[in-house]
Amino acid sequence: MAAATTISVPFDVYRFDPTKDRAPRYVRYNLDVAPHTPVLTALLRIRAEVDPGLTLRYSCRSAICGSCAMVVNSKSRLACQTQVGPEFERHGRVVVDPMRNMPVLRDLVVEMGSFWGNYRKLEPHLIEDPDRPMPKDTPTVMTPQQVDAFYETPRCIACAACYSACPAVEADPEFPGPMSLAKLYRFVVDPRDGGTKERLLKIQPNGLWLCLRCHLCTEACPKDVRPSERIRDLKEMAIAVQGATEHGSKHAIGFKDNIRAKGLLNEARLIRQTYNPLEAVSLLPQAARMVRKKPEILKAPKAIDGIEEVEKLYQLLDEEKKS
Ligand code: FES
Image 1: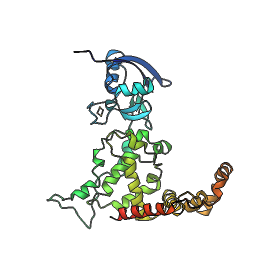
Image 2: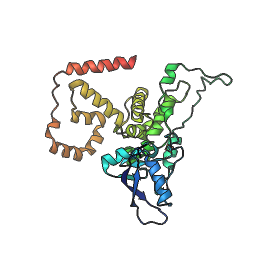
Image 3: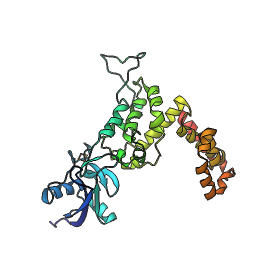
Image 4: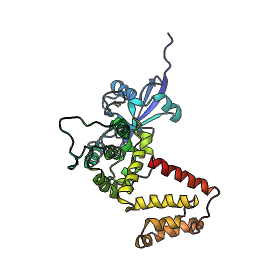
């Protein structure tokens, strides 16, 4: 039998011990590996054969426990699920960093207190409705459609890859993060939960509208939970419960109105739709810079050709939502 082909791969691995080192550094390790070797296996070989001090977290080695999330070639993901070959082919090396948005304890291990703290704040358990107490002795029967509404979310293994990839967490550590919001969605759509409205009201001010809809969380999620889509659903539900009371919700509704009316954004109108006059005054310096760069934003755009088609699409979406 022919020997398996191996490739010689440079690994640049982040090393940092905050109790001893002044600053982080990268250490290069060269390793001959088969292309299908998981990055985790390569790191364990480095630890066993070259550098016993390399610190990392792992357990199942099968993309189940979520322990081995780290940043490989700038993307947050599971090291046990990422093969060395494609990474080497694309980048010429494998750069391994600890997850972002959490402090490093040592090398590739981070302290996940903020991740779990934000999750706990959202009360991730069923809240009983006093007017509709759950039966104590008989199981609650749910229809397949009711279960379907949240079947993706329980796949989450809480690896925190989404939290590490999220720019909103980086900008504001109070933002609960994609996993917490996806789990919140799971309770909001659960017909047994009695806290739906309160959950949606509580989460709005800092929680929901900081999401930029960049979809990096969905790209990072190893279990296809698609947190950004769950956050989108929560935003729609929050508007349904409370109307547009936040800048984020006003902006979302204004954006939709503009596109429906003309097929294009009227940026000056969108600012008026999002901010009250006093708030808009504070944005004048920023607005002046925008106008200098792009004077045409002051003119209301004409409707695009085929605007009727845009309207038809919106009507279709409205009907779909109703059904
Ligand atoms: S080691 Fe368990 S998910 Fe990677």
